[in-house]
Image: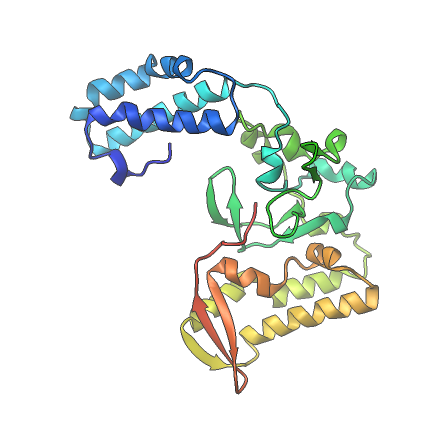
Amino acid sequence: MGHGPADFLEGSSTDLETLARQPLRDILAEIQSPAAFESVWSEVSGSRPYGELLKLWESWNPKQRLNGWEDLARVVEKAAYGTRPYCIKCGTCCRKGSPSLYRDDLPLFRRGTLTRRDLVALRPGETVYSNEDDRFIRLPVEQVKIREKPGSRECLFFQPEGHACGIYDHRPLQCRVLECWNPEGYKVLKKNKLLSRKDLLDPTDPLRPVVKTHEERCNVLRLQELLMKTAEQTIPDDEGLMGIILYDRHVRTYLSEKFDLHRQHLDFLLGRPVAEVIPGLGFQIQFEPGNRIVVRPVNPGRHEND
């Protein structure tokens, strides 16, 4: 419930009620629950996990305390989410990030609801914000997402004036199964296969080899290795790090000019530009006179999304 061991595991049982009430308030506020706080708290405070915490806290070791706290956290979430088992179309989900796409979403392309220009590819190794984990994570596999509006995490199809979705009747799987009042939807998604660029590129598409070569030469994991190797150093502008940046720029320019592709289409085919990925990996680069480059660590994930 948002508290690490340093916050409460060494504390007294007299602090438990205050620590448990706050996350309940936070969840009820986030899902805009119409329920009265005290009525929900009555359910939580009358539960077995809460009673055991109060009774046994002083005799438990830190591991037992943590396990007991996690049991109570599940009670708090269930009680809070149970107060609003329906969608009020507030737009909160749509503002917190656009959906990733799954194999079940392929019909949306056949009917024309979605096109490749509506998408962005996030490549393995990129830093993204996970709503499920409530933290930044490194992607283990490729994800294809609906694009977000520039400068925000708001979904491309969200219409803020009416708190509405422009494709609501044909919205993607993630939008259909995830409910802000019920985290169980994540279990449904884990049983489904994520879409990748290969699923949306015909085997005979002339751009497919370009995408493959770009991924090999601009691999995010390789990019991170080079950044870590050169951090806090001024290095020659060689074929390593600079080679990746320049090749990425070259391919984007080539595809734009030869195939008349817009930036939005390129973000699907090639993923985000390398220069935009680098800050999310925890680094910034600065070009120096004499064809040299400086790499400096920064806070990772500042501009990333899930």
